[in-house]
Each structure stands twice: as C-alpha cells, then as structure tokens.
Length: 211
Image (cartoon, rainbow, N blue to C red; front, side):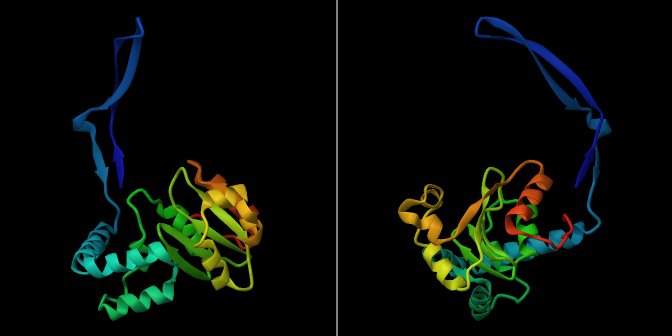
C-alpha cells in the first residue's frame, strides 16, 4: 500500500525546562492524499478473511498447540499433521501459530527460503539451513542467533529448548559451546545490512533474491 500527499510544515513554541523551544511537524493536505492499493489486494483480503475464520473456528485446538509449543519444539511437518487431524485446510501456514503482530515478514521470508527444516518453539522459529542452524524472532530489536550445523538436529533442538538466550550469550555451564553458538546478527532498520551480515555468518554462497 502506498500513500502520496502534499505536506505542509508547521511549528510552534513550547516552554520546556524554562526555555522556549520551536517544535516542527508535517501535516498532509487532505485534498492531496492519494492511496494506491496493491494489485492483489482482493486476494490479500480473502486470505486474511480465511485466516480470521480459521483462528476463530479452531481457537481452542490451536491454543492447545500453542501451549504445547511453550513446552517443546515441534517440526513443521508434525504441525501440519496435527492441523490436518483437526480438519484445518491444507493451505493453512502453520507458521501463523507462533506469529505476532509486530513480526516482520522480510526477516522470516529470507530465512524460510533458505530453510531445509523448520521447528516452531514458543515465539521462535528454529531453522536448519545448508551450513548452519538459526533461531529467529523476526522483529526489529531482536537478533538472529546462528549455530554451527550439527549432525543430529533433533538433539540440538531438545538441548536448545532447555536453555535461554541469556544463558547462551553468557555461556553459562558451557551451553554456548555445547550448542556450537557462532554469534548473533542484529535486525537493523536497513534490512540489506542484516542480509549481508547473515550471509557472512552462515557461510552462504547461493545468491538469494531480496524479497
């Protein structure tokens, strides 16, 4: 969605800490505002309606799955099976079970298209990539945690579920070493910077499109 408008600068003085300070702001002229909608807006609306219906209709069952995810990580295929047993349509994206309103699709999609296997755990996504394992909360202010790829992914996931990110950062009881923690890649306002730092961390050679 795009918005175009003519903006007018305004300002006024305010008394702060015994000093007068000039405060500026911009206001859009209502008659100049133009709203451009995506070409697939109808499809997006229909998809949103389907998700709204499913989360409402299967609220109790999905809440049980969320409670289970608070205790243990579940692999995507297992979640697909559970949702299928509940009668939820096959086109339902189980990633939505852990999705939060402030999450950013860009960070998630960049990792999803690189992922060979995905687990959901609490509000996180654990993904096996070609040369690494990452733990992701796709939101500004968070960071992508990168680990060396181990032969036994299930063992890694079970061990990760027993610790915390603070323990990993401080290497309490050697947990960072046991998980082969390589470091963090902070989510930045400039997403391209995050991508470049991520690629360096995970040893990537394939050139993925930035979408």
